[in-house]
Amino acid sequence: MSVLTHGKSGWTIGTGKPLSVIAGLNVLEDEGLAMEVGTELKRICDALGLPYVFKASFDKANRSSIKSYRGPGLEDGLKVLASVKAKLGVPICTDLHEAGQAEAVADVADIVQIPAFLCRQTDLVVATAKATAAAGGLIQVKKAQFIAPWDTKNIVSKIGEAAEVGVILCERGSSFGYNNLVVDMLGIPEMQKLGCPVTIDATHAVQLPGADPRTAGASTGGRRDGVAIIAKSAIAAGADGVFLEFHTDPDKALCDGPSCLPIASAEGLLTTLKSLHAVVNA
Image 1 (tube, rainbow, N blue to C red):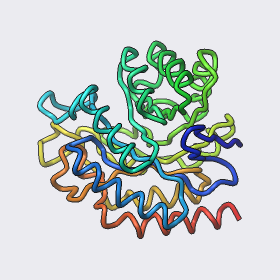
Image 2: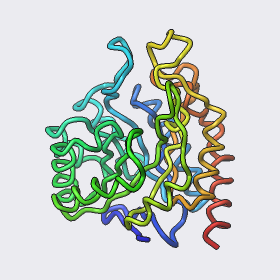
Image 3: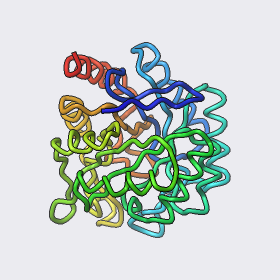
Image 4: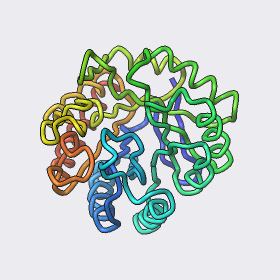
């Protein structure tokens, strides 16, 4: 087991450390919403003594429809994230999609996230490793829906061969037949055996890919009520951190509304997760 610390912010994750929280918005809509959600999550995490990172995507490149909202894009999105970082004084996590984005993203994001569908893309992985190491950040890799937990060793090895940088692995469910995902909780300790802290993306783990009845399958559906169940189960299984997405009005969210939680539910859920984490690690 291992512990990672972000050098500039002091944010920590791993064995013997408090439950780490990476949470925010699915995708940036505007700076006002980002600040509202980030401010509330920071307040809660500060009160609970939980290390907090604000997360939001500047671009959702993997959408079911070309008409789906993707976000403000790289340049404008990074400006918003940099502003939130400065105003709230919190680390930032965001994902990238192309190797050419790595340096710009690593300059702003303290944790650079490699999306699940792209975690085997060598050029992206290598560029992200080099840029993040140079900037003094950490990398979070989402485990793809189509690989086994133990096969993430190849991704960790690939990153290590490219640069010396801390790696967090993120469980987000596995494809199970059509339009469904399941989470194998035994995968969490399996990935921890690789010497990496492991988080649970409870938001994306409840997705129903290509099965949103509101759009006749032109977007991804979800089971919002399952987020807390997945999160609590994963912490009970030993996860080091939790990845969650919130919105002030999830039903009006511009992306993945069926899977995100109302911000009003954050305090209760994070309080419960902290208690579970304490029991598991007593």
